[in-house]
Each structure stands twice: as structure tokens, then as C-alpha cells.
Length: 191
Ligand code: ITT
Image: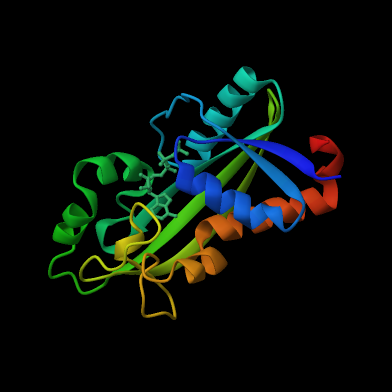
């Protein structure tokens, strides 16, 4: 019998990536759109945990949320927890401007999945993908910062090689850690 899990996000791209990553393990992801509070915090984990608890209150079932961000080394981790705001305001062109003439282009994506099993039982799963910021936007696939992010050991951006993104991404790695938890101890919790 497949496991069912609600996934609350306003971002349909994220929902598809999570669904595809979990489907082969027999986990059926039900995408729901909820207006959830994004608290101001200095860590993605805190933002995700707050959202997961709020989602549980609204749904009344185990539910997961995910928060992701792009952390640029030369900018001391910016935009990080502010990724959503930065993407909406200055966008990829703005980030490239901030990086003009910067030699060290190291960056990473981080994803934090928060699974609320009850009102006060929230489990956290994280995944990271290291890489660098491209000199200009390249590629049309994916979403968000994908056109300016080149994963380590690769020469194309996530937006140029979306298949590769889905093999190595921060989201893929966070879902892997979620799956390990389900396999080891969580199966009965979601049935
Ligand atoms: P939620 O409703 O799930 O919060 P969101 O789009 O606001 O959806 P996040 O806050 O987690 O998602 O993401 C912050 C920003 O980082 C978001 O605006 C995206 O543009 C960007 N982002 C997140 N994951 C990404 C990915 O895999 N590739 C490229 N950009 C990504």
C-alpha cells in the first residue's frame, strides 16, 4: 500500500520535484496550497519548522513543507533565508550584478524538509548541493535561481540540465534523508 503524505507549498515546481523524487519509493505526495507564515529567522530549519506546525494545525494530518535557499560564499551566505524575497525583487540579474568582478563564485543550495507528525513532533531533513554562480543566465528549464547555478563537477547550469539537477540537487538529497527515515522508523507514522 502506498504511503500518502501531504506537501504544502505555493511553488508548483517544488511539488513536482518532490513528487518525482518520492514516487519510486511508493510515497504518494499530495500537493496542497496553503497560505503559511514565513517567519523571519536566521536559519531555514526554523522557518520550515514553524510552517510545518502551522500546516499541521490546518490539515490535521502528517504534512511536510520545504524551505530552500541559495547561499553565496562571497556574499557571506546571502541571499540564504532571504532567497524568496531576493528572487522576487532583484532576481537573477540582480544577483549577477552583486557578483560582478567577484572571483570566488562558490555557492550552495540548501533544502530543509520539515515533516510534522503531530502538533509538536516535527522531523527535519536537509540536503545541500555545492556549486558556483555562473557569469550569466543560461538555460530555460527549472525555476528560480536554476539559470545561474552550476553544480560542482558539471559545466552546465541546473536550467540547462534539469535531469542532472534532479539527480544531485539539494531537494533530491533532502528527500533521500526523508526516505531513510521512513524506511527505518517512520512507515507506520504516515499510514
Ligand atoms: P514555498 O511556498 O514552498 O515556501 P517558495 O517558492 O517561496 O515556496 P522557498 O522559500 O523555499 O520557496 O524558496 C526560496 C527561493 O529560492 C524561491 O523564490 C526560489 O526561487 C529559490 N529556489 C528554491 N529552490 C530552488 C531550486 O531548486 N532551484 C532554484 N531556485 C530555487
